[in-house]
Length: 121
Image (cartoon, rainbow, N blue to C red; front, side, top):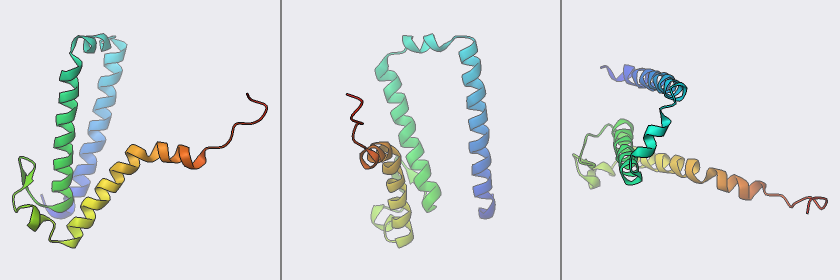
C-alpha cells in the first residue's frame, strides 16, 4: 500500500476490530458463555495475554519506526535502530504514553487527593 494510505488503513482496521470485539462480547454475554473461561488455567490466560502484548509492542515499534523486526530484534540492529533522533523520540513517546496510561490514575489520585471532610469520620 502507498505510505499515505497506511494511517487510514490502520485506523479502519482498529475501528472494525473494536466493533467486532464489541459484538462478540455482547453475544458471549447474552449466551452466558463467560463461565467457560473459568475452565482455562490462569497461567495459560496470563501467558496468552503476555504474548499478545509482545506482538502489539513489536507491531507498534515497526509501525512507528518503519523498521522490520524479527524475533523482537530490529533487522538492522539496535545501534542502527537508535541512530536516528526521530526514532528515539518516537520510542520515548511510546513508552511515556504507556507509563501515563499505566500510572496516570495513581498520579491523578495523588495530585487531586483532598483531606476528608471533618463531618465524615
